[in-house]
Image (cartoon, rainbow, N blue to C red):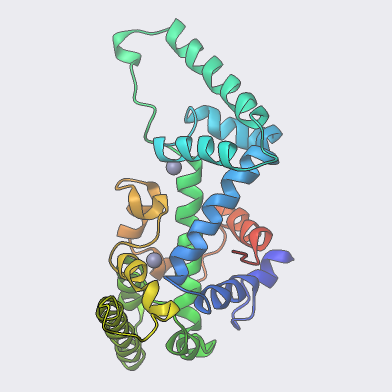
Amino acid sequence: MRLVEIVKNDCSGIVYVSIVDAVEGHGCPICRLLVRAEEELMKSILYEQVNDPHTRERIRESLGFCPYHTWMISDIISRELGIDGLGASIIYLDILSTYMNNMNNLTRSTLRDYNNKCIICEYLGEFEDIYLSEFVKCLSNGGLLGKYRKSEAVLCHKRFSLIYGSIDDEELRTKLYAIQIGKIRKTIMELQEYIRKQDYRVTEEVSPNEARAWRKAIEIIKGARTSANILENTPAVKKNNRHILTSLLGKNFHDTSLIISYNYIEHIWPLTD
Ligand SMILES: [Zn+2]
Ligand SMILES: [Zn+2]
């Protein structure tokens, strides 16, 4: 029932609402949603899912997370009041015991690399697919194009490319392109203004948008700081290389993990800074 509500076609479900929320903020809206999802997913593993047998089994199978998310767990525990080492200790007792078992039976043919599987990367890849497909779907029939035009948000190059490449309607594609170019041009002007105003003879004040333009420029080119942008070979990146959007736009929502992801998106919405 909840899933039907979330994936309904009229661009009013929870995924659409969270995208609108992100579009009305700064930076790349898809990246912003991924950064939020990544952080919340990791906290929820540490807080709530540590005793969930399915999650524990998946983590045990991959012997933890990719190196990026392993160290992110450490950062979250150090940073967040209220998260102590208990969740990580329970998870790593499982992992280290499994590893010990493997080590006890080690031969040259059973040597393996434990770095290439990570459930957080996998979930983020699914979230990204969902957000991107909803973004494309709702550009015209959900009025998202108009909201994007008016906002300070700018899609990063990677998500712009995926979205632009997935739009079949040439007129819509042209409109999105024109908006994107306008936003890049505006960012260039903000950077120029910021630099100009550093001169001691100029008395005009730097605007908030000019002050954050350098960061916006970084995001336009490389995306925000999330594993989906930093890691080269995550499942998310591999999936993006396939024609994922086409299949998702075909409403192929029967994949169980996608259903879990949808429910999770509902769980982490709304965005809060
Ligand atoms: Zn982005
Ligand atoms: Zn990972």
